[in-house]
Image (tube, rainbow, N blue to C red; front, top):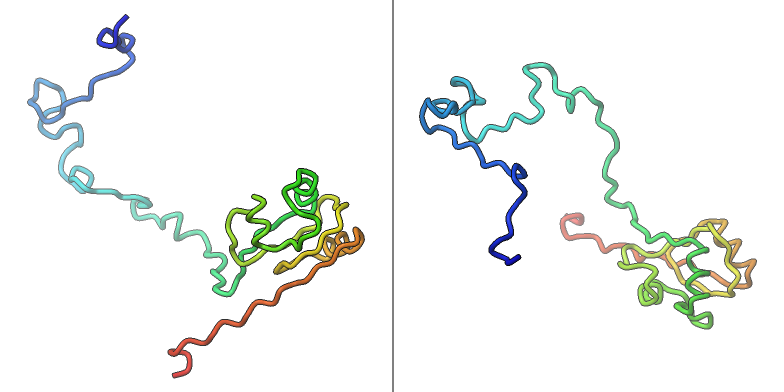
Length: 164
């Protein structure tokens, strides 16, 4: 078999219907769109229109809001940290920071800092400098003999328009 002899199985593909090519084709004149009206025209997309009935996106209530002051933390569980220590990706003697976690491959982007969560077991004595931690994580770190320092976020400088 050669490349020029390769072909589809019979009946696997169907050629597209050419519309508007005379009444003998069965799809002439109006091309299967019916007669006149909005849906017979080109460029019409009536998404969400329900024939005059109140559309679903307007019947449902609005919920929630965007918090411009919300923080997006990288969340890491103690179990994953212990696995990284066992694999040798985290140095026990060094302080665990945002940068060291990126270097070890545990997180990919810095975001607004790291939050340590208490799922899993931590046996290694580690010292942390992170943005946030849960109460159970702090208790587990201190029980393992480690220490944790929570970093304070610097307040953002006021803009010129806010002073005016």
